[in-house]
Image (cartoon, rainbow, N blue to C red; front, side, top):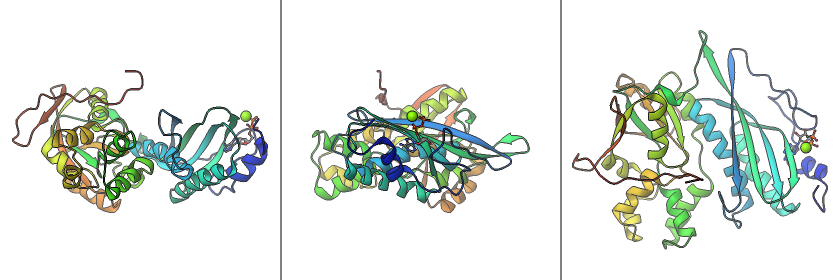
Length: 332
Ligand code: ADP
Ligand code: MG
């Protein structure tokens, strides 16, 4: 129950829309989806909790965008095509201005990916948003085309899409730990509050990438998940990494007093980037670039997979680095 507008009015007004791809959407006890013949359903959930994943004063449209974006990012990492999602929402009150903004941000991103809201749950309580997404992955000759964490092999190249580090830079600025010029803050904040899930790239990499993951907790930490699942190690060239990284240029960061050491930490272990980290055989370099071009998403080759377990970082001179970077862990 929610005070003011009733629960069912709220659902009808802000979260009920005609569906085109789903067989049945909001309004019954279950939604019905019909995956295309020869496909598997890819399913993933992500929860956003106030004070934990976002600040209480973040704009509702940005929050609607981000709640879905982080889920679409998981579909992207599996190479899945978005199909539908459900929304479990706990709200302190039925604030119409907030609901209008939130649903606008949510549906703008959903429409851009042809992903339909088919159901959910609405309750009163602390602000908490849990989305479950459903996507499709083709099965070819009996084999799933899903990209998994477990497929990296020694000799494979390691890549990352887009840019890293801006979201963490914005977070530190909003926490008051660094002071940024207005333009740089706006740019970095856009990456923190409105991440771009790499949905087209994930699908373009099917049959090319040997393993993939989305970067939510920081590049190194997420890459370690691939290494563990694949039973392999990796060597990364941090000099390449730092050059490619950050929408805002590293000169801007330096101008804002972020020293190279901190630039590298935000880049390698900042978190909230929602880029894809993936591996592919060296023989697939042209195919990877073609996939990147097709998806209009730049990718950078930053290292290689080794048989020797563990993650090794090389500095600009190619010498091993000693520094360790911790990635995000809710319970650490
Ligand atoms: P039930 O009591 O059977 O769980 P509800 O009364 O909670 O159903 O919800 C009624 C309908 O509205 C269901 O189809 C449910 O999926 C949908 N729904 C509830 N909350 C949301 C929401 N936040 N977004 C989209 N659909 C929702
Ligand atoms: Mg219910």
